[in-house]
Image (cartoon, rainbow, N blue to C red; front, side, top):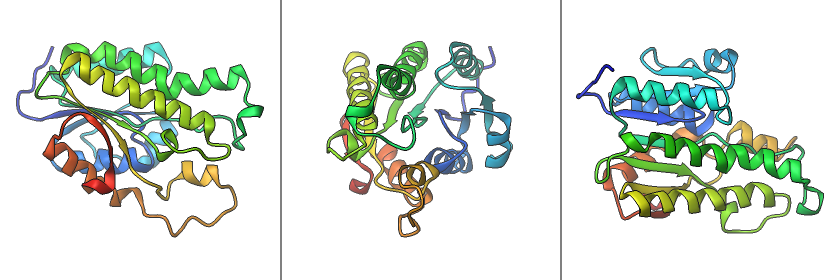
Length: 227
């Protein structure tokens, strides 16, 4: 094992697009060693990540891929920040709950809840109470009720609960953060054909996330605009 006692280490899932990409770039620019992932080589290449970011190809729901992420943390010997950013809307176009099947539910929850839960459990040896931080990117759909957003919202509500329970069980600072609406491909997928150019870019949300990490308030659910 190679231990780096200087650079802070972050693992950001889904760091090849949207908020994950913006956060990965900002952390790397601030001197963090960032581990991230993308579903295929093409996504990682298109992301044009900083050279010192450790990007691993794979799907977060795959056990072997999660093992590769854990091994990358093990090689660094520490984990200061774990960010669960990778997520899925579920089947597109988005559907009302009356149209959702058990298979739809299982597939979406594997990505939005199951994988973050299991990955966090696998990384507990490196999550240090009082020092490390656990962040899950949530949504206002976790607490509000919008037509066709039920499957996604239920997953985010469950992720909020899992995240804050890990905080209660381990003493690690744990935050479920609603970043607000952003101009991302995921948001465009939710509203095909609509103009979302009036929404803020993910880069505008990153400073709020960094201020949250600096402030280290009590574990809980927060809105990015609060910071």
